[in-house]
Image 1 (cartoon, rainbow, N blue to C red):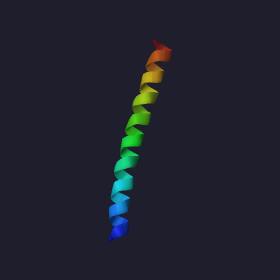
Image 2 (spheres, rainbow, N blue to C red):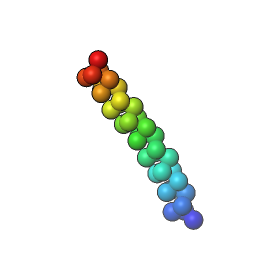
Image 3 (spheres, helix red, strand yellow):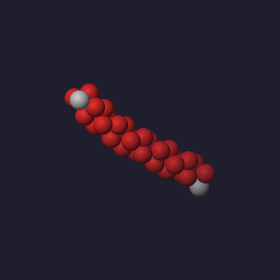
Image 4 (cartoon, rainbow, N blue to C red):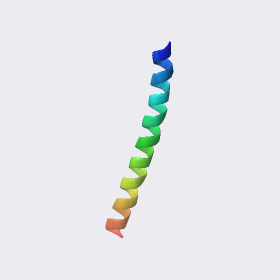
Length: 34
């Protein structure tokens, strides 16, 4: 059960990190393609 809670937290953090990474990549691409 504890593992499930930790996995849920890890999944939430992973989703946030992925969202930030994608947003950063999109911003960089837009800057490079002006």
